[in-house]
Each structure stands twice: as structure tokens, then as C-alpha cells.
Image (cartoon, rainbow, N blue to C red; front, side, top):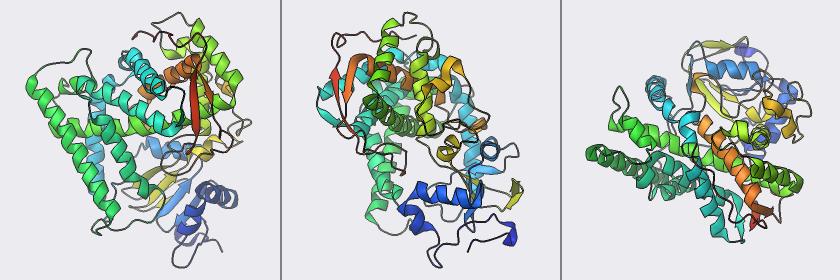
Length: 441
């Protein structure tokens, strides 16, 4: 039987007397959430300290957080729920965001256009028409691209570290059970070892660049952060770059895997994108101006398959949400995937239709959350949108994409949402193998 308003909590499934809802949730995450949404509404309890929200306005209120009552997801293994530390870290991150934002905005991101497309060409050409795992290939591209953006000539070895981080976190994505950090499990040791190696490597690069006093040409994000005013400490620069590397790697790779799936399934769409790329002559305009169809495709893929399909915020003080009281330490889980597919906000919500974004049409209200919202909106959203738009256009322009399992490689709701297991062959299109990369704009 569902819980009612006891203790003024939203209703929700009772679950197993000992294990709660975790077994059913882990067995079919999105199926479980769909059922709960139907039975209990836009706000429902998962357990005594966890609430799911499928209402776009309430989700936006949590993300925008005008009362500053929520912190972002707590650090892994923070079983003590140290909310004070989380608030302090959040304040430090907001300060760092203000310093780094100009280095990631549309203008700054546009300076890397030529390098981004060149990296994509190198990665895809290396496949030489072979059948490859799409998600792995896209991770190679995005890891190389974000490492180059952050570190320029000092990026050697960073893509490999990012791949190690993906592998180290993979065992934790498939289960909601969390064991104490002190248990000497192999996956714990590996995660800590990779984390330590990543921080040490990034710290070494930051210190060497600062000590040299030289700037790279063209400038990279590390140069920008070292010249920030007020000055950022080495640990602050390292932490900022690590956050950008992690987000700028996994999210766009997952999105690109879904984009490749759509291009393989829709050859007419791919042909239209190729024609748009061939007809683009304004090489100094941003992608939104010169590649409107490619940008619409990206937006629609992010609507149907948002890589960050679940977002967590934790109340660090008592607060009310939609008439429901939350206690300090309560978790609020927001689900962009279900919000993006709700017929109340989107006509034909399960249909892939880039035309809904024609002429720069905005999303309905607060019902579009691929990068979050409010002051903590994804810091790299402008860079990611630009990279995804350019990559979508370039893939359609240069390659014919064939996939033997495009109809069966469904998205997997573990970690970043992506069609895991999708395989494809990128065959150079006739007369397009030598197409020039766009210059930096």
C-alpha cells in the first residue's frame, strides 16, 4: 500500500520491507519511474529521505534555488551527509564559475571551431570504414576535444585519464546500493587510485604552466584561469578544470551517440544536414546562425535523450517544495527525461521532430532541462552545444553512417543516457573526403 500524508510526505510505493524500492528501481529504472508518475503524480516519495519531482516548474524552482536551500549532489561516499562542507564547496564553485565563465561562453567556444572539427575528422578517419562501437568512438573524440580546449599543447595523456575515470565509475552506475568507503573493495580502490592520479596529473600541469610564465598560442582555458582576477590558487584551478573535463567528456559523448543513431536511422535527414553544411558560406557566424537544422537536431536529441536524465539536489536546510516540507538532508531527484516526454508540455512528445525548433522556437516554459537551469546551469553548455552542432553537421557532410543494430540499440538508463552497444560504420561520402574544416570563428 502507498504511504499517505504521514509526516506530511508525498505518497509513493512502499517497496520491500527490508530493501525498499531499490531492487525494483534497479531492475528497470525508467519503467519504475513511469509507473510511479502515473500512480502518485508529479511529486512522489521513493523512501523516507528521497523525493522524485517530474513537474517542470518545481524542478526549475529547485535548480534556480532562489532561497539557496539546496546543494548539488553530495560527494561519493559522503555517508555522513556533511551538508556544511557541501555548502562551502558549492560557494567555492560558484566563485570559480564567475571566473571561468568568460572562457567558456559562445565567443570563447567559437575560437576552437576549427580544432574541434579537425579532431573529429582525425578520430573518425582512424576508423577507416571499420565497424566501431559508437559510444567508445564518441568518447575518444570528446575527451580529445575537451582536453585540447583546456590544456592545448599540454593535453597529452589527458584523454587516457578521462577514459580511466569512465571505467572506474562504471561499476557504481549499475546499482543504487552504496557500500562504505572503508570497505577494501576492488572497485573502491580503483576509483580512489584513478581520482588521485587525475588530480596529481592536473596539478602538475597547472604548476608547470604557472611557473613557466608562458602562454600557449592559441590560448587555452588553463591560460585563461591563470590570468583570472582575482587570482585563483592552484587547487582552485585544478578543481575547476577537473569539473569541466568530466562534464565536457561524458555528456557530449552520450549525446553524440544518440545523434549518430538518428543519422543512421534517417538517411533523408542526414542528406538534408549535408546539404546545409555544403551551402553554408558565412564562416564567421555562430552555428545557430549558419547551421539551423543541425542545431535543431541537437536540441531534439537532447530533448528525447538527455544524457543527464536524472539530477540530484539535497536540501541543506528545512524548505517547502510544492507544498511539501523537506528536512535538511532530504534528496530531491529531478527527471528531465520524463519532463521532456510529457504531453502536457510537448505535442507528440515521443516523436523525433527537429521541426519543433524551427526558426529558433523556444521550449515551452521550464520544460526543457538538458543542462539544468538557474545559476548552476551547466557551465559548459555553450561549448557543448557548439561542439555538438558542428559535429552533427560534419558527420552528415563527410560520411554515410551504416549501423547493423540501429533498431535494437536502445538507450540505457545507467550513468549518462546513451544507446550502449550501438555499432556503426562511417563510410566517406563520395566527393566529401577532402571537405575542408571550417576556420575558427
